[in-house]
Amino acid sequence: MPENSSAPVALLMATEAARILKTTPATIRRRMQAGLLQALPSAKGPLRFALTDVLALANRDRQWHAPSLTAERHMCLFVREPGHFSRAVLALIAAPLAAGGSVVLALDRVQARLSALLADPSVQRAYAGDRLHAVEASAIYLSGGRFDDAGALERLARLHSELSVAGHPWMFVGEAGSAAAQPGAAAVRYEAGLDRLLSEQPLTSLVCVYDAGHCDGETALAILQTHPLTWIDDICQVGWVPAGEGHG
Image (cartoon, rainbow, N blue to C red):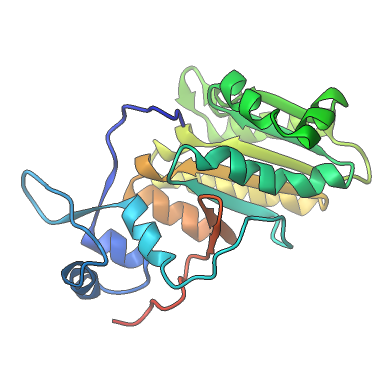
């Protein structure tokens, strides 16, 4: 998920936006007419909407607060603004590090990402104490240049066996941009595999990080459906059934 990615912003059809907001296409059009949702120009075909705008609308009536580790151990972090990445990740890894646990970060552009995180003293101490590890996301998610859900799960399980400490929490934070570029079915298989891993490892937590600007409607829906808890940016919590939506 590069901060200056040149990839085109994925657009959602009204039906996809409606499924994310748990409402109807007619309500989506009313939201647009009320100025709550902007339709983007399209050379031809139906109206299209940016996922980032749809998620912002989902959050409109939610309570705003910083991300934190909760009882949910399988979380998704949608990042809409590049500058929010470090703040959101720092908030999520604080609890396992404070409890003496370990954190593994699978990051795009790992050196730049890690340098920003190491500005925090607690992260510096964990890194120096070999309790925080960072690897390139491609080394986890890709095989032969392509997203490999089975291979990613095997590599993640191996990391867990090598880097976890008995009796202490262990968290994996992965920038899953390569997964978002695949059909929704691949993302679902990967997320289901993560749930199996969690069932075997009670002290493990997983955070999947996606760039909301480059996630298509099918994959966004799959991600929302397979995560018990979803964060958007660094300050807002939202579930797949947003508050205030669900009725036309």
